[in-house]
Image (cartoon, rainbow, N blue to C red; front, side, top):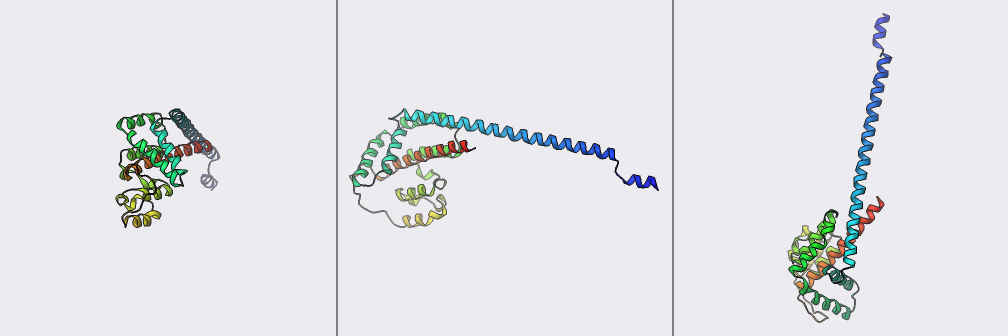
Length: 230
């Protein structure tokens, strides 16, 4: 009877061995997970450092290129944001008229080279914006992913686009679809209160490129600040 009762009780030595084995497995798993997390954080940090360095190099290069197409686009955006009176709007129109002849194949190729240092390190959103910038300059605005931009940009795009009938409801955020339908329901008319020097499509091309370039700079700064928080 005693032997029968002993056989039902766990052997303390076996329990000790099993406990040690389980503790070892758990410890190894913890070390592995900690090592993996540390390695992932190190890779993310290295990527953030490289991205920030690439952005800073781009900013410095553009600051030194006052006559580049990007510098001119940035100036246009600044003019537009500060334009309220008829004379200020005329100044924007005059400057756009000077830029339009400069948007040549050579300038676009030069612009491609300007982004060389950024492309390998940029976030996916910045890369998307860069692609959209070239769509704008090449008069392919219908290929721009408008819905990926902030609502303010989308509303601006809808209102200024010479042919907003090319936009589909799915191209913009749901909140802006009523505005799109309303604007597309009638033909734009009106009188310009300034001396028109370029046609509507050319004006929109320059303004759109300037606006997208502003979004690129904004997103780069957001990437840098998010990296610092991390």
